[in-house]
Length: 215
Length: 392
Image 1 (spheres, rainbow over the protein chains, first blue to last red):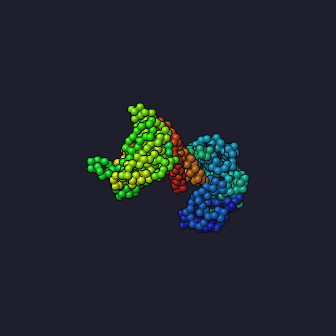
Image 2 (image 1 turned 180 degrees about the vertical axis):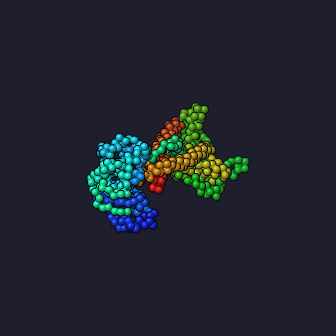
Image 3 (image 1 turned 90 degrees about the vertical axis):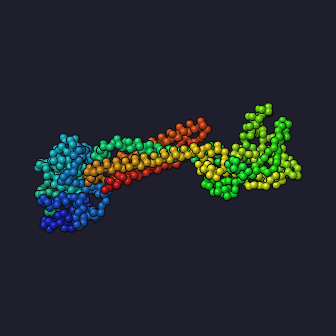
């Protein structure tokens, strides 16, 4: 189980000088299952672009990206949905929650989208662990961004996956909640034998990183 | 849980009353369309079913219209016969051959004394509706078989016998009576025994075997043959308006009673056409409204659908969900339409039974298959519409 990036350069930032110094753009590298990979980069260097390319949302690039030897650009919508239900999970930088649904409903949507691997009790325990159990039945739209971030993290842990892609997942969390969230994520990854691909502005020690790359 | 969340996200309440009206319209459309087909099926059933088949229905005896201009010239020429044979409503044409000799018939029993001059006609065997009878004749035969119109027996039993104080006779008794036919030729009269072998409504004439007519015409003809003046035609559907108009065009005449269904048929055709056409137009509009409604619902929830797919919801899951939401209502409309036609058919069957018209109590296979085809069509359109907008 691996992502292979073969000389990927996003067209939108191809002309920027930072691309030439990148350890990812224009390089041939692989992300393997079970490894924690930290990608550090300042703003505007394409962290979210990379996440979207990995998750199949952005196809505006040169080069090729393979997942298990299959070119991601050739995947059909149905094949993408199968990967997103069972192999790739994600926490978007902009979270992508449904504001009209409650926190619980947002999480349940992902939990029941495929064959459940986490039961409701366990989900509620996770919410308690991150301190959002009291707001589970509130519409997400009225939750604070920090609360929404924790909802999105729990949602991402509701499915089976080999890779968990995290795009600045702790940006609105305090240090205590960051640690709690990291522990929860690591435990879920360990249980699945999965790896983390996390992007952030700065270096951190929330996870035990096997690889650290500058974008 | 997943489906109830999808419902909450995708399905807005807007246009619910419109879709209900469209579904009601669909039900009516299906009802009208299937009714049109069912009426046609019933009509075909009435034409082809033995229970309903009266012997005058399929056979028409035709002759030239007799008026001051045509008196003495009532022959139907061979070109007109050929033209008649070519008509789509004609299955076969038979020429009625009249006797051209003087003949009489009398009872040989003192109990039923009667004597009358008489003439006969013959038709090809395939036009005779008396079965199980050897309707042929040879000069050395024991008797001449005769087929008599039912009407003659009725006149005897309900008028003549009463006025003459004679006993009434059942068809079985009449068939046992032996009559004497006398043919008057130039070499003197020749006597034959004769028996009535059957009664018919098909041709209002005293029918004898062709061989007897040929023999008589040869032996005692008073005049030369002038060709055919009466024809009998076999037709699939005597109510076909084309029959009436052909006869009128060619100045031919038949018993108009036999064409009585023609005008009903025109009315039925008009009703069937109007119902069918209205149903078809309503169906087209209903389908159009459904496709627009599906499109509108998907467009209204475009953002949610895009996000759902981003999060991993399969387009197949969404299509299936939307199909399950939109199709059952339409299915109910179609099934209700079919049930309504079935009820109508059941009621009609009971009503017509009292008029001695027998139609099936259930809808025809054609009607049912049309209903099923419409279901399949709507299923296909619903799936196509959903997939078109979900995959885009």
